[in-house]
Length: 179
Image (cartoon, rainbow, N blue to C red; front, side):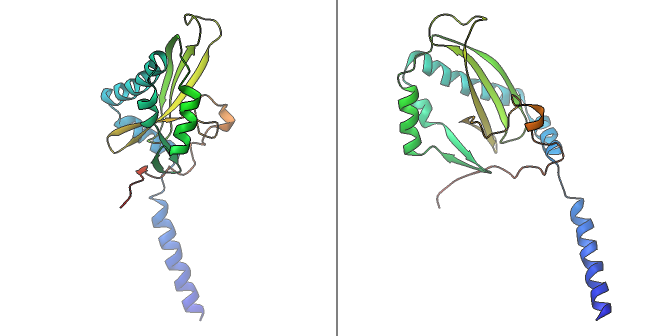
């Protein structure tokens, strides 16, 4: 019996050590993702955000809202009809008068920031403005736009609330497709 226990512990230790070499941290995944990005990626994300903001400025936001997606864990979903109706009620009558890119940051395929400052009346200046933050998500070679909510990681939150660099790497983002 003692031989089997020793053998079991040896096999367990062997596989534990072997699997630890495959462990990827969030920091490793972030570096790998950032290194894979091209100018085309940046341009695609900026165009997605600008199209949305232009639609808020000129009206006709319905098309942009229908193209929004929702990230739940590592699965990207088309926005639900119920959520679409809520967003149409919120943004359908909103007419911004001016906007500007506030910044963008890439972290991983599912955690990114794209933010715009905007005003409802008057030109955008150094005075009070509102902020809209998107979470662009990359699946394969295609970028999708999601709205950032208060539960998502962002470079705008305090350092203590950031994802720890030694946390496990996020899972690959997949599209929710019906078979």
